[in-house]
Image (cartoon, rainbow, N blue to C red):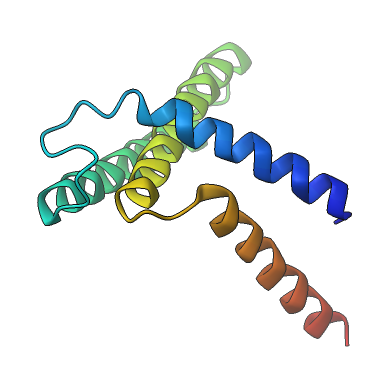
Length: 116
């Protein structure tokens, strides 16, 4: 990935994390407390479960209109997953963009090892 692309990604994810923080209305929000981390971790697990349930439904459906509706629900739930991840990182005073870029770097290294 080119440095310019990384900068654009960093800026976009940073803007998302900042905007998402405005909706942190749960108890102990923006305190970095164990309670906030616990709440967000349980929320993340719940949202991932909802994604899994929708994917299970998608696998059982053949009708294209029904599949389209389920795919829309999956995208919404994945958005909720993203919010939970972003909020967890915020509670830990960590950057979504740095986390995402470190993951990309790890994937690139793994990809190179696989090709070697």
